Image (cartoon, rainbow, N blue to C red; front, side, top):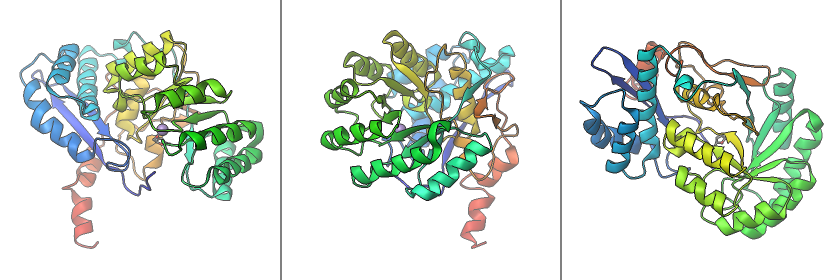
Amino acid sequence: MATMRLQSAVLVRIKFSDGSEGIGEGTTIGGLTYGPESPESIQSAIDTYITPSLIGRSADDVNGALQLMDKLVRGNRIAKTAVEIALWDGLGKRLGMPVSQLFGGAVVTKMPVAWTLASGNSETDIAEALEMVETRRHNIFKLKIGKRDVRDDVAHVARIKEALGDTASIRVDINQAWSLEEARWGLKGLQDVGCELVEQPIEARYLDGMAELTSSYEIAVMADEALNGPQDALTVAAHHAADVFAVKIAQSGGLKRASEVIAIGQAAGIGLYAGTMLETGLSTAAALQLFSTVEKLHWGTELFGPLLLTDEILANPIVYNDFCVEVPQGPGIGATLDTDKIEFYRRDGARSLNAAAGE
Ligand SMILES: O=C(O)C[C@H]1C=CC(=O)O1
Ligand SMILES: [Mn+2]
């Protein structure tokens, strides 16, 4: 879908009149290749439209802020998410509670965390997966396929599944690349080689096709790009167009909207999975606060964003061990920024200046 050598995160800091602060993040994948928002559009929506509407309002009224944002700004879910996370973080800090408590309380302290294999080369992916299993970091793998011929992709998945056997769960993400015809061959082949789940095999708008695939094969079908908030969740559920929801806080429009997506999935008997937009530790911490309150995350999480980045921007990094990611403790979302790193990595910071000077 996209080869990424750099990730851009939009970070939000809200200062409240009592001196408290909240931090948030809005991040997407591959500029504009994944979805309709870019880092630049997120910043512009916040600076130009969202910030002026929120100044002077009561900071504790998160629901009121959400309603106002929804009224004044259509779409732009990732921009709203960034601001909403900062509002929840500030509220939690003022109350001295983790955000999970504001959503009724955490029911778990850690969750299984998948890893993505996307080199496209079977041997490279097998070596990486074996090392992850050996070091007890991951035993759930999501393979990115859909670029090559369906048969070649199925053979690639088969090689990886055979090498790993029952020590790992193998899943694939097509990111909408297949036609319905290709998907029929693909799902049949993937199911035969022991792949457990296929994520967004065809375009998000082809609900009837997703419904056909969901009912025709045993392999689980997961909706990702089709889920942009609670209304989409209801549509997908009503069409029986998925077995599983990949719930992403950014794609849903924030923690509250993601909790509504989760509720619709639960009511419809749809499996749940916590997805990522390859966010930093900040948004990952926020997501962990919400997902820790969910009764059953049948398919675990892929909240591994910080592990893909070459440097850490949190003073208290997210902890990964024993195939799991831990829910951060402490008030708010439980994340503290490393201010030196932020100064260095910001677009007008030392990193960009060094790069411009050829250093
Ligand atoms: O799910 C996606 O489509 C986006 C991305 C997030 C994790 C990953 O492996 O890919
Ligand atoms: Mn996906």
